Image 1 (cartoon, one colour):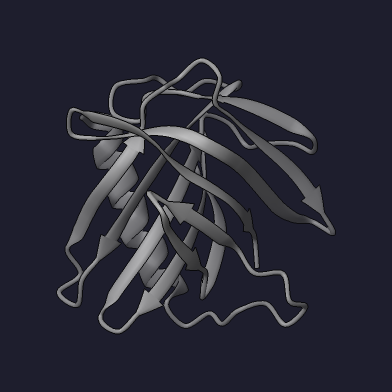
Image 2 (image 1 turned 180 degrees about the vertical axis):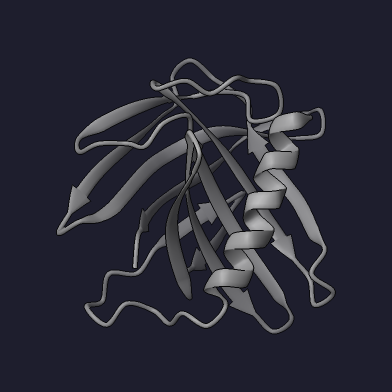
Length: 159
C-alpha cells in the first residue's frame, strides 16, 4: 500500500506540473494501450525524487486525465532493461520497476485502473536519445483488484 501512495502522490505532483505542456514538436509522442484502449500523450515527463525515478505520460480528454506511470528504484541509464514487479507490494531496486495506470477526474481525484502484477517475463527497456528518456514495454501483466490480465503496452518518450 505504501508504493501505491507513492505512485499516487507522485502522479498528482507530475500532473499538476505538466498540465501546461504540449506535445513534442518533433513528432515523438508517447502512446500506450491499456486493456484494449489506445491513448496518446499530451505530455510526458521524467522526474527523480530522492532515489525514485518516474516517467509519466498523460492523455487529457475532456475533464479526465488518463495516465500511465513507470517508477524505477534508481535513475535509469542508457540501454537498460528492468524487471516489472508487483506495483502494490514490491520493493523497487536498481533492476526493477512498477507500472500504474489510472485517471484523474475534474476534481483532481486519482482513480487507479490497474497496476503491474509482477510477472517474471515482463520487462521495461530504457534508452536515452538526445538526453530524453524513451521507455518501452509490451503486454505487461496487469492486475485490477484481484483480476489479472495482460493489459499494457507502450512507448513513453520524455518531452
